[in-house]
Image (cartoon, rainbow, N blue to C red):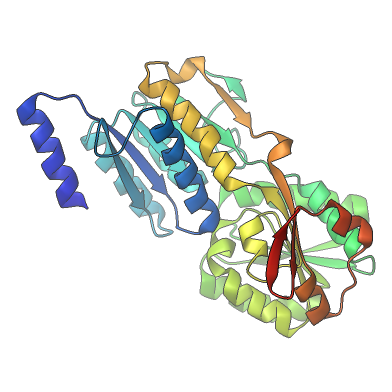
Length: 323
């Protein structure tokens, strides 16, 4: 792929053509972040920006490494990218820290202000703009309490090194306090650490909450194996996390997050400075409620009809149905 990119750039130089590079990087690859990338690329194509035609899309996966994310940012700068796109907080931070001139668009970042990407939501001076996936943590925990009324302790699984996850944890603590629940931190910076922490604390929790944590998303199959073994329900802020063993998922359609991000990239490629565009949270109409009745039966939980009536996606007998 890199050899093809280099050859294309050399050909462009020889022929004097104008092809812009769009650098896209994600901290890891998992279904939600992959859906963001797909949404971005689809919107670019729909607006006449096609990879290999009048733009070059260079996608790089940091494989969960911050140092690799930094190296990717430097590579994009060396290519004189027209715009750099960072999917998830660590990758976005690497791009923002690397350049104050090349336009940077971030996506799937929970709290871009606390992550020091932008000073505020709305329009900002400088070269950075993007889409936040600030998830409705309180609502998610209210769903947990409604579905599991006897729950007293909630284990929150997250990587304390991810700024977005720390923010979600703080919101979860506030929500748990308001709902009379005790929060227990289950942390790890790698899959192995996270699963080890879960195994050590699984008997201390009545339910598990997972926010939009990238390490947890990459570890969800191992996490769900432990939870199902102990008949502990998982409630997630990411539908794709929930699909891998969760009882309930309530979160954004990440393909729509990507499309909203793609619209910003299109505007920049057309010449609009990032300072004239708005950083925003995706609309609440993009939220989806996922319920898995098979998991409910397996762990002995009866899901209230009021929750089932609100569900957009329901899994029954191994089949996911959209409503």
